[in-house]
Image (cartoon, rainbow, N blue to C red; front, top):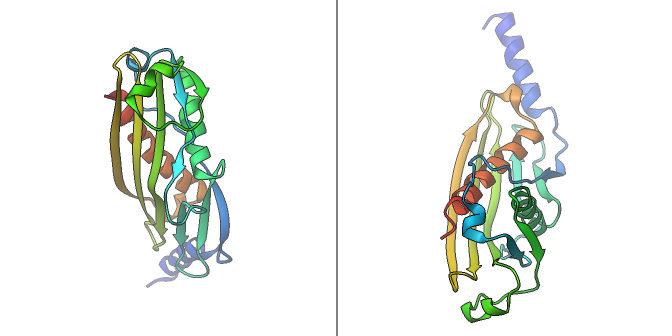
Length: 205
């Protein structure tokens, strides 16, 4: 190996392991739709009740980890915190941007007979079964594997029905080592959220 190649390899190792102290950091979560979602109001109505989301994961404080080649791991929490609040606010913001008025609602049992007592056109809650993103360093292409699993309950007053859907997604992505940073981790997680929620809201029932 000549000196130039050795120096390049050394630089890559430094980039991969330079933040060896580890720690816990926040990833800002958001839902930026990729699809148009043009029929959203037609399906959901002009007003949507959002109940508090539920995090049913065994470990609720973290959403991911990065394992460097050397040193301590980096752990990640959601911003906003906790995760159920981050997802609630992400969906609320997107629905509002699409012209749907979001009304915070208390707990909702998911009974179709209760829809007549709901003042909004539709009502939704979400259960978090799994939400984890794990990145492993390498000399050239760190890999990020993200797994999410949600159960979404959507009550639609005009239909008189409650629709329940289980959403599971596992996605692996890789990047050149020189593009790796915590913002890349956040972008990857948010891309997964966009895929999951675009799929749901483009065809909610």
